[in-house]
Length: 247
Ligand code: ADP
Ligand code: MG
Image (tube, rainbow, N blue to C red; front, side):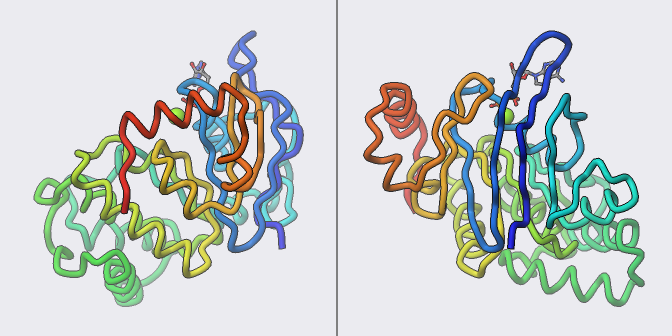
């Protein structure tokens, strides 16, 4: 089953075309990574899928439903979850309440059920012992794992990650990648923007290499590894030299 379909997506900011002719399909259980130079449009694709950007033309379908259909748009968007580079936790709430309040607000769950789900999802990311701490008492890696738990608590059918480890101290990258890899193994459907090439190569079913607002290549990791296009070689070699984290 196709969870997400992006068809002929075009996005302009004013006269500036930042995405053109983007076509992408993600099936249930697939992991697709978006890689490419800064400014090539990776975040804009994710933001378009969760309706944070108004697209200029084209279509985005979630589980076969076009987001242009206003009647079902809200329900479809609830099937997506997103994890950002900067965590976006509520600083004045405990880890528990970051999840419980979100569930009460978004899913209208009662406190008891919301607490149960908060505990379950914190268990998944290995942070049940931090449930009563505040974000300021956690490391960056732990904050990002809480953000992942919060996204998971909404039971999304697909999780989107926008450079989830880019803001982290290098020593904390591995713990977040491990949680993501575990989710991938358990069959979570994911779109990941990441500069961690070894990780992307290992967990992805397909990798889209973006260049100047277009998907230049959409290939399996092994195809990409053997792709001698100079843009890809230069990009991958630079990323590996710069910050690759092997887990
Ligand atoms: P990436 O995530 O690959 O670094 P982005 O999707 O953030 O790239 O950005 C793609 C292009 O769109 C860039 O040229 C960026 O400057 C431009 N852009 C992104 N957001 C806006 C915005 N809100 N207004 C104008 N231009 C934007
Ligand atoms: Mg980006």
